[in-house]
Each structure stands twice: as C-alpha cells, then as structure tokens.
Image (cartoon, rainbow, N blue to C red; front, side):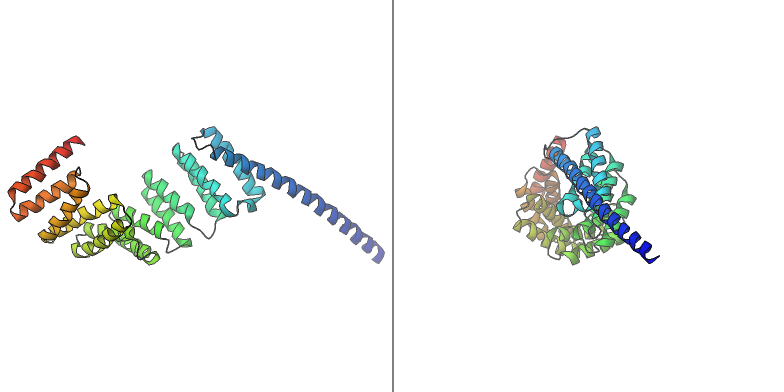
Length: 288
C-alpha cells in the first residue's frame, strides 16, 4: 500500500509538473495575445480621430477579453484605455456603454475615484442629475476629500437648489485644497445664491486674486461681475463702481458688466453715465 501510494504520489508530481508547464505555456500564449489586443486598441486611439461605433464595440470586446484573462496587464496607465473608450462612446451619445467602460475602470482601480468623476459629468450632461449625484457619492466613498468630485457635486447641488449638500461638498473641496481659487469662487457663488453677500465678497475677492495670479481672464471677469453685484446689494457703491469698471475694461463687449455698472451709476445719481452704459448693454444684448 505504501508503494502504491508512493507511486501515485510520484505520478501525481509528474502530472503536476507537466500541468504547470502546460499552464505556463498557456499563460504565456494568453499574455502574448492580450498584449497584441492592447497594442491594437492603443494604435487606434493614436490615430486621434473619431472611430466608428462598430469599431468601438470591437475594441470593447478585446479589452474585456484581456480584463477577464490577463487583468494584471491593466496595471498602471494602461487602465486608462477604458477611460478613453468611455469618452469615445460618449462622443456618440452611447451613455450606457460609456458607463460600462467607466465601471470596469473603477473595478480595476479600487482605490481611486477617477472613473466616478467622469461618470458624474456624463450623467450631468445627459440630465440624469440624481444618477450623477449617486455616481459622485460612489467616488467619494473611495476618496472622501477628492477636490474635483466635491466641486462638481457642489456645482450640481447648487444648480438643483440643494444648498446644504452644495455647502457640504464645497467644504470638503476646501479641505482637500484650501488655497485653490476655483473652490473659493464656488463658495462665493453659493453665498450669492443664498443672498449672503458679505461672505460672498470675501470668497470672491480671494478667487479674484487667484484668477489674476494664474492669468485667467474668464474667471477674473466672473469674479468682478459677481463682486459688483454683491457690493450693489450691500450698498457699497464706490467698491461696486471700481470692480465693475475693471470688468468693463477687461471685456468691453460684456453686456452684463455694462448693465451692472449702469445700475451702479443710477444709484449714485450719475444719469449721464447711467444712460451711456445702459445703452451699450442693450446694444450688446441685441447682438447676441
């Protein structure tokens, strides 16, 4: 019995060795095939032009095969092929397929929330606001202080009138990056919507300093107009005039800036300047 047992063990060992050799050969073949599939997908994306939906579906099938057979090949930047594919499907309005790609990316990146950030944007663009909020929250379970997800969530919540959620998300964004001007701008805008003009001025001034430092004229103009409106509400007309004149100087063709400056001059009792800017605002509005 012992001999038989020994023979069986020897035979089993030989079979295991042969099996391992065959498995190693099989794994090597699969890995080689998987690399070729990845290279094919990468070559198509390198063309930097829209691809047909039928081609995108084939690319999805190939990547899905690699994901199931040799998932370790998606370590590192290769995983972002799923993100590229999601954007390609989104280009054609294929939202469900784009979501599938992003959720596979999320599965392959269990410690990151990149995929949920993009999914939230796609769903917001399509008008699926509740689903977008849910996607952002999925991402925040992984990275609670992610500045970008919190900022997007705050913007969407403010748009929907869900001010408590917006405030909470912005607070988290500020925890992640207290000095980022974009977050200060969002806080200022939210304060404006809630008619809290004194804190709005503080946030907007910080955002304006950031926009000037980064040389971002669009953000500068937005800050200046919002500051002008806040100062008008606070009856601080000299400050309102100063920032609104700067806004008009920055963009002479901005109807909103001329209209706000006209209102400021009217409150100051300067009828000539009021008429000048009011007339210009109406002319620019007609040209839109």
